[in-house]
Image (cartoon, one colour):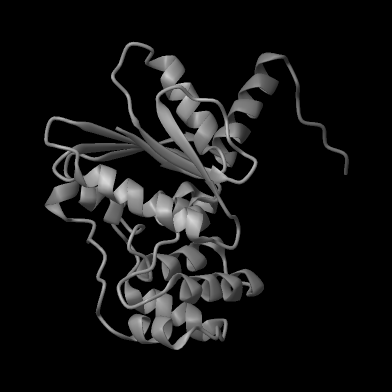
Length: 239
């Protein structure tokens, strides 16, 4: 089962199909409007970015349902890249999509870092913060990620749908206070409570799961440095 979210999700899905021509593949990925790519076995949906819409919420619900149908002998391959948070915005119980759209606008207008933004998003979501992987249990989940976040923390890439959270709710509350974010009442109340707890890093249901960063800015820098060395380029002191 192949699932995915992000601006590169459709191209990643096509690459999986090309790499595994004889494997029984099926699934669904969601990408930004206008970023689709032809696929034969994996469905591609499109939704809004950076402010989410109902199309993204529908795709997130469908992916949770598909993951829940996976069994112990199945492999769930999750393809994730930048933009995945907005494309899979699914409200936690007690919230509406309008609530999360307002939260997203407030975050985009703030000077919060991407890691801080995604920490808040994870606590208000029914999809991210490891919840997709929980839906897939006991199937094995392998995540292939293209990182767009400093430090390549898997929990911050698209708000970590398959990664248990390392940051607790106190960090989300701290960011809201620091940036004086005006959140919808329902979102503020949820963050102030202990409801909708995300799975913890030590949760046994994640024991067989793995995350692999397949592309990132740091990997690109390393590759560029290696190529420069190979072709004989040297640093020049221009001082």
